[in-house]
Image 1 (tube, rainbow over the protein chains, first blue to last red):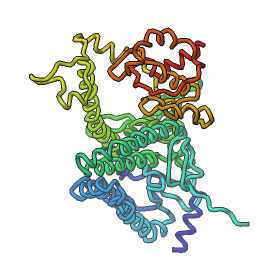
Image 2: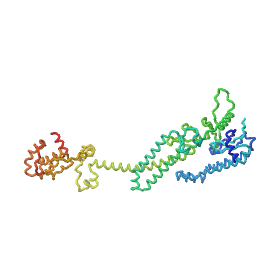
Image 3: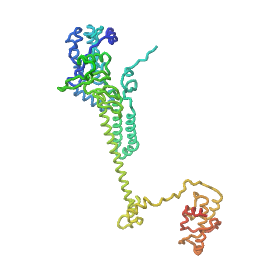
Image 4: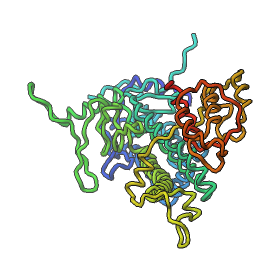
Length: 139
Length: 362
């Protein structure tokens, strides 16, 4: 864990690879599962695709419009949204789950391969960025 | 050296202003927002101060309570719209920007020198439709679909609706529902207040109409209530000119009657008052303390002369001298008044101010 913190602090010094958003299904939050060529030698395709797919499923759960989201919305409106001072929204709960998942993935899979996965929320939900921990120029 | 903790909002690019240590986020120009606040709070204060006591007593206390709840909801929605992040997309960090530029160059190929590079557009297929994503030069990102760059706030905003000066913020993905609820609840509140205002306006118009009717007939409210001039066996209104126009003229354009109270006159007590008070003035209607000294003397003089118009109360011995007194009365006001029994006067000189005017002519 201590190692991971160090890695995060030093991540700005290394080259990064970005996995962009996938808008083929509209504006819902989804990342491309296309494997970036720069990571060819670093990690197995399936592992990365698995990570991105799991992240996508978490976002689908967070943004799902259904019974629970209606209830939450109506209750919040009825209380003039004051209830959000006490209660955590569904999206916030899922974001917590995502950050735990990412940390776990980093510890198990990515750090041993010299990579660091950053949470998309830190990049405005635009990209999933992978940092090479060693200086490595891309082309 | 203790370094102060710097929060991220202090370093955010763009033209937003932040309050409460980053909890509140607004546009730079807030003047119109303050106007909105003033209008809403001002109108509702007037309503609560002036209309609600009447409504609570005469109709129902639930009316002001509901208005208060609605007002609080409107304010909550307004503040939530104005103070929240509309969905600003953070600008690309340097590495990300470089990565994207490299992707663009790779996509465009080699551009011959001197030629303008093609516009930076990325095509995306959404639900079997091609949507073009534009590149934002300020934020150095390809804007997601439905995002737009707000030039006032200098930010790219997701699902950008518009920049609203009335709420002092952009309206975007995160605060659009609060903006909508604000406009809807404010409409309800306005309609609610206007309904009760209209009730008052109708009452006022009714009252005005009623008094117009009274004026046209030259009647007073009191007479109307008592039915003094209506009904078969009652006398017709003797004060009416029998002509609507004339009646209106009399009430609205008639003479401006002066006040006979002399409210601002000075109270005085001196010898002339006590001398004149020796003259019997018990039956006089007008001599009393508020009358000025000269006035008092004039009135007493009047009392001792015989009335110009003989009436049933005039003593017989005064009657023959009426002719002579009619000549005398305009002239010497400085004659010492002899003590005599004073008949009640039917003379127009009892009008104190008319006498005063006459007095001044001497």
